[in-house]
Structure formats: structure tokens, C-alpha cells
Image (cartoon, rainbow, N blue to C red; front, top):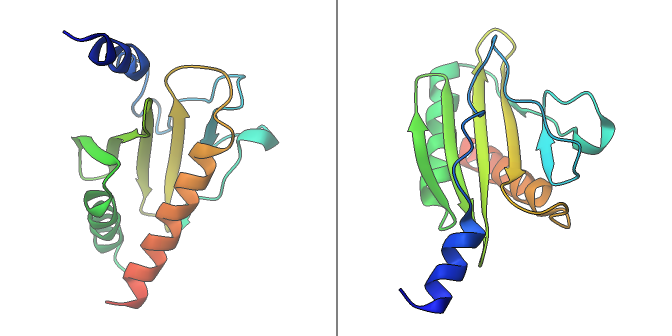
Length: 141
């Protein structure tokens, strides 16, 4: 394996085992600023969930379409109410999660860097891009 390949694998890190839904919630963000979550209590981590009206399953399918179209996104886990994706930048992999709250009319979001301390706001910007595309897709349907 070349040196560059080895460095890229090291930057990707391992898939975290603590992700997923526990007691109906996504994982809590760590204390580092490289994570955002619509379920976070700490202001620095807070981000709004994806809001929708109408059929929850149609909204979740629309989100999946948005994620599949992204060149930086790979779906790792796909359930009826939960999506887990790997989100790639040039050298790093972040983990994104989406949890459908049918009763609340929202899709909760979480995105965190696997490595490092600061992501310079990348996870927040990416989730806002996904929100924009989710809303645009709804308008165009």
C-alpha cells in the first residue's frame, strides 16, 4: 500500500460503535465542537431538525434521495426510521445520522467528525446543505 493510501485510511478512522438509536434518541455529541445534533442540549451543538408536513415515509424517502445524489455521502445503514451515512471530505470521514420522528413531524439529524477536535464548522454547513436540498426537493415534487 502506498504512503498516501495509508494516510487516507488513517484519516478515515474506524466506524464508531456507539452510533445508532438508543432509547429513541441519537448519540449525544462529545464535548468537542466537531458535532451537531438536533437533539443536543448544548448551544454549540444545536441544529434544527428537518421539518416536514404530510406523509412521514415520503419525507424520509425524499431525504434518502437527497443523500444518494450527494457525491460525498455513502449510506451505511438504512432502516424505515433511521439512516446512517458516511460523509467524506478530501481527507476525513464524518458520520451522519437521521432519525424519523413521525409524531413530531421532523427528522432528527446528527453529524460528527470521527477524528480531531475542530471541524471548522464543516458538519454544520453540510447539514444545512442537506436541509436546503431536502426543502428544494419537496418544492420540486
